[in-house]
Image (tube, rainbow over all chains, first blue to last red; front, side, top):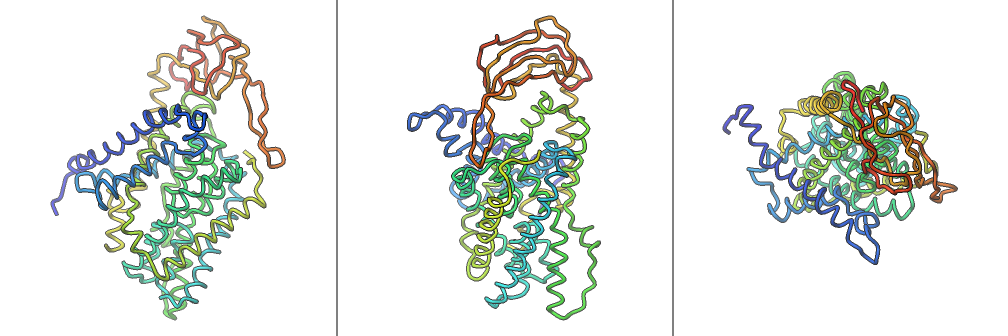
Amino acid sequence: MEERGFLGKLAAIVPGLAMMVVTLYLLKQVVEPWLAGVAVFGQKGYITKSIGLNYVLMSILVGMAYRNLLFRGSIPGWAAEGFRTTRLFIKTGVIMLGSLYTIQSLAKVGGLAIALIVAFVFGTIFFVMWMGKKLGMDRSMVGVMGAACGVCGVSAAIATSPGVKAKPAEVALAIATILGFGIMSMFITPPIGRALGLSDYQFGAWVGTGILNSGQVLATCLSFNPAIAPGTAVAYGEIWNVVRVISIPFVVFFITLWYWRGEAQEEHMSLWGILKSKFPIFVLGFFGMTALSSFDMLGKEGSETLHMLRDWMAWIFGIGMVGLGAYIDFGEIKKAGGAPLKIGVAAGTLKLVLSLVIILLFIGKEASF
Amino acid sequence: MSAEEKKKALTVFKTDRHEDVAACCFAGLAVVIVLCYMAFFLPSVTIKAPVDGKLTEIKVKVGDTIAEGQPLYVYETKKKKFVQGQMQETSVSETFKSKTPGKVLSVKLAPGEAFKKGNGLLVVEHVKGTLP
């Protein structure tokens, strides 16, 4: 394959990125304001507010249409590099979201978030291990599915795969299964949240616990309430998401240990080694941003500086959402099947329903910050 | 497609670590650009409405020099609150305080007028080096 220089690589990104930016611009600046003015059942804004068809959801849908209809299943070469910047935009947005919090506010909600996430992450892993044994699945497949269902669809499955000697096809299957379930959750949870009258705090806590992928948590929270500010669904959901992402190296360690103990082979593993190689360091940026915000170094709450920063965040996320949609490949989801699909759907549904029950029973409508 | 290929297909970077570092740099750059622009290049600041509401009192006039924390206007807005699991809307009066010092250049609305979130209410001269 031809090696490109830095400028060549940058130039290769431009067409796909331009397509994502133009798409977002049209949806955010033209289509959404137009839809907000359309009266349905004699009510203006019915489509955007009551149905929740805002620019975030439209970005994902249009991204999906690009991939599956326009490009017929695979992003063409001229646009591929640009679309591969999707996760960069999502991670950048997550880092900037740190500015919504102060150290004090994180300390108030953080304890509850840690307790819920730890219980659900490890509870799901145990459930997958139990169900995998019942269905007689291969232990390496169970390990990858446990990581994928427990903590984070793509990253954890890939991070765990070498430790449990998973075959590439098993990893691909686990990812497709779990992302497929996530896509379904992304579209059904906002209407359920509205129907149950969940507050932004409850909704953020629910999807932050129940949904398995960072991009999907953000997309779902922004679909529920597109505002980016303290006290909104995305602000609460992100705390849960960050705690979940931080737990990836611990999950990798735990599952690898389980696998090798079962195989009765000696494996020299160190938690420190896994932390060094797998820790998602972008979350350090998130906490750095929270530190700056705690000392009012990004402007005071309600200032024009913070308004502008949040506008930028909305654009950065929006680009990520178009890309997220374009990575949803119906063909790949169709390939998922058999025992992994049963486990993925059972574990995902159980997690989503149980977390909703716990939130309805124990979490009040209003947060302490 | 192998696992490594699948992962590679999701990023333009060599590894996840590289992508994480790039995201930190990108976010840092975006923040620096916004802060520098707001602190040193913005000629005047349009103070926008934080929520939908109705202006009840303007506490400053054109030409006034204002200090940080000084009340600028009073407005009425609807606040949503959950009482016993039910959402209730109540009308509350709020005072908007200045986030930065400066001089009032223009007042765009009069008491009694309604506004939407994001509408400009006042224009204030920007003091260089401060974050409005």
